[in-house]
Amino acid sequence: MATPEARKLGGWLRAEEEAGKVVYPPRGCRLKALELTPLEDVRVVILGQDPYHGPGQAHGLCFSVPDGVRPPPSLKNIFKEMESDLGLPRPDHGSLESWARQGVLLLNNTLTVQQGQAGSHAGKGWEAITDACVAAVAARSEPSVFILWGSHAQGKASRIAALRDSDRHLSIKSPHPSPLSAHRGFFGSRPFSQTNAFLEKNGRGSIDWRL
Image (tube, rainbow, N blue to C red; front, side, top):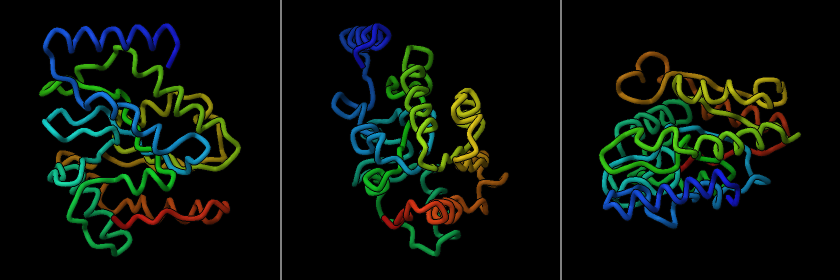
């Protein structure tokens, strides 16, 4: 993150915090997705929009919350679909770190947000960084799975030429797991079994989705 754009973004974030605005996730967690799932380990990419904007929720992985924090509605719906798809019990926590450590890149489009203000850091520079991350995965020769929940994630993927023009990878598209849209086709989409079937077919093993 030593590019001029990244330095500009870093300066803007510091100014926001010095002005008294609360930014989530806290410093030290903002690049957690990239730290837990380095490029060479990526087998699956799940794209989110921006971090949770409530206290204590965001910890650097899209859709995930730290242990001890109640899973938000979208995450609860992800667990419902996981139970239906794979027969796995719904976990009693909302941390997806074990997925990240197995090669599931849990990447939000923007990696910070102001408290209580969804989408508040859109257009401030994160998109160029996360676009580059997606493009780097898409450009690799190893087949990977891109799980695209909702129009925002699908729109981001459609901008990545390396993904759009690749037939090596599998893109799984469905409505977002939000309660507003989950019943329009997210439930019953079976993303977890589809992912493992593709990975196994291509010699990349499977993800243990149990939490």
